[in-house]
Image 1 (cartoon, rainbow, N blue to C red):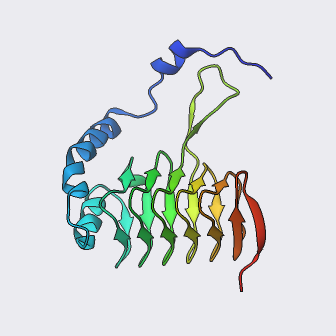
Image 2: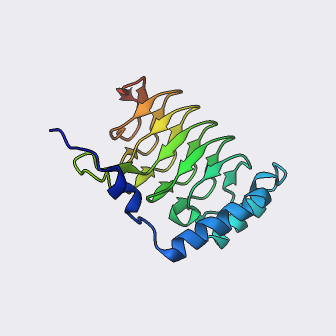
Amino acid sequence: MSVDIDVTANRRRREWGFGVQVSRVLWAACQPLFRFSPRPCWGWRRVLLRLFGAQVGSEAHIYPTVRITMPWHLCIGAQAAVGDHARLYALGRIEIGARATVSQYAHLCAGTHDLTRADRALCKAPILVRDDAWVCADAFVGPGVIIGRGAVLGARAVAMRDLPDGSTGVGNPMQVKGVQR
């Protein structure tokens, strides 16, 4: 199906209300407090994220170079880790379970566009990384995807569909390998 793109309608759309826009500006203004905090200041970054509405569990380690779009859409479990230069594009909800790891340069993208509409309206599809899962270095997790409990999404893999509990996903497009023991 072909749809003529209406760029003008797309640019006219307002996906976010005034309050969200103000919150985004305030979050951007606080970025130096987050980004330039010393690496071992895990508690400071947890507090800062909580001030902006994120739910962050105890002992979660969020590295200072992590890029977070909208922290109020984040839920990060206890003892989880989000590594250097990871990108949490939280246009929709992103949940990272307890003891889960999102490694360096990984990208979790909880937003896309409706390709069936001429104005390419924004879709905010949640991402869930369940407890004890590992999203390895440079991996990509697309909108609406669930990474199962104890699953491993390998380095540079692209998950555009769910990865079952205890399995390993590799490659682009992701291929699911057997259950881990």
